[in-house]
Amino acid sequence: MNKTVVELFAGVGGFRVGLNNIKSINSKGEAIENGPWSFLWANQREPSTKSQDAFNCYNTRFPHKNNSNTDISQISKASIPNHTLLCGGFPCQDYSVARSLSQEKGIEGKKGVLWWQIRDILKIKRPPFVLLENVDRLLKSPSKQRGRDFGIMLKCFNELGYAVEWRVINAADYGHPQRRRRIYIFAYSKKTNYYKATKSKSAISIIFNEGIFAKCFPINKNENKPSVISLDTYEDLVSFSDNFSAAFEKSGYMINNKVYTCKTTPIFETPTALNQIILTQNIPTYCFLSQEQIEKFKYLRGSKKIKRIDKNGFEYTYSEGSMAPFDDLNLPGRTMLTSEGTVNRSTHIIRDLNQNKLRLLSPVECERLNEFPDNWTNTGMTTKRRYFMMGNALVCGIIKKIGDELKKIIDKEK
Image (cartoon, rainbow, N blue to C red; front, top):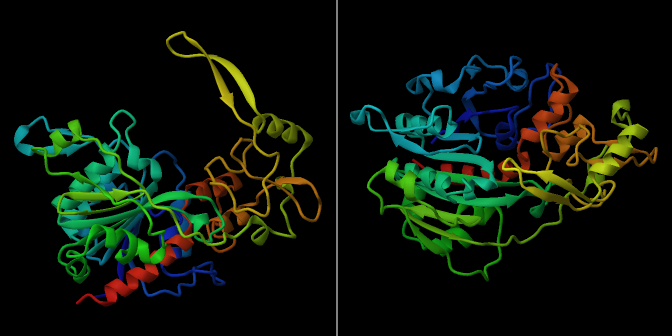
């Protein structure tokens, strides 16, 4: 089976960087791909901005006529090339469903929610394998009906003939330079050899030993047995959406409408510390903090208790604990947000090794936190947007590890 890929919500190309182990850029500004994966089609569209910086970056590094900047909802799913792997990182949204106004048209999801675009592609193209990434709060979304949204995803996968494995992974737990926690979802068709080889194995075996995440990211074996959640006790997806809730844990497995999920703890690897990725020369001058910025950060990172009034007129006290005045270079970076580089509590601050001054991380150092090649986002976008792109990106090294194991799986297919 060919290792062909379609990449959705591609951003600046984190999945492709990871899967094809990209470490550098050639003289034309194009990525040097070292892996076996052939990307047939990619889609990236940012509806909220006129400038399409992420797409322009992707298209610069991977110039191809099949790179799409069109709203995915406007694309005929049948026109997308057949592929072995569908991958992408997509937003955590409200996945609720309802009966259409015309009853005979069946069930429809909320407009603009990207999960339904993924579901439509799966329904028409039926790729053997799917790899998705999301924020870990997906497992508990929405707050008033915990687990409903992830349950809808699993229910859809089951209806389309897939089994699913998932794991919440903190990249720093497995040797990477950022404490970035994300959920990774691996789905595979019941027509694959992988499914035929695993369907008779126990859930405990899949979660702890035999599954793709167990092999890539080992976990301690002395855990409790998985709890079991049934997805087949509802009349249809509308009833499911209205009534389902569940406590999904950070590891799990779904097969034939039965979900097995449990808490797991990683077998830790020594993380990459900030002092291993920061620049020692050619630091942009804008990274160094002014005295005014230092004072603002001192307030933002300090402890505080603030009287506030809610929308109902009730007064309450907002409390916030203190943070260290700057980040420890002997630790991996904290989770990077899209506000990185601004005067914000979450922004990294380090003490420069040479000048002994407080400063921000540079865009290149932020790229290194996500394991992109240096200057990956230096494609004409503003510095602020470069920070934003890395706050939105994934840790490419996690995808590389999954991709290496997925290659072995696909090599065993017909």
